[in-house]
Length: 169
Image (cartoon, rainbow, N blue to C red):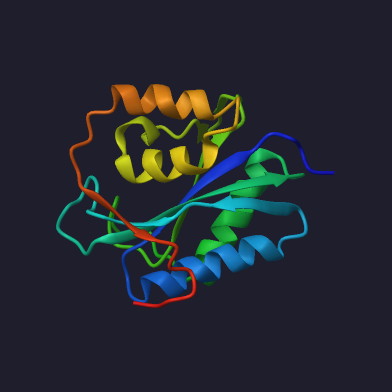
């Protein structure tokens, strides 16, 4: 049985075909019997964060419920990244697909492999703005996101490109 807590993911890609990469990840998430995708944000094009000398990203946020424990969901996300040919060669470098757990209800999680809320969520427009869109009515996560947005100093640009899940770039 799925928990009532909503888990929020940030999904991004900046290696072509970006839209196909993200759509594949969302499809694979929906196919997991232990996960129910409850919302997907609009799509956003964003400039790279951290390491700027690379292609722009497409980013979305996904809200889900799951029966998995946090470490087990992380393992499933890494498996989806592996299927999407994700290579971890350069920190904050180009990637075919990136799936990060950003929020897990009101939980605070700190393990060797996982920090929730995500360590850099409060510093990233590409995480906060799409998540705010789908967390407005979530009494556990909505206020967290709004508080982070109020303190956010990220000056990187972000452009809503709508719901492009049926298109490709």
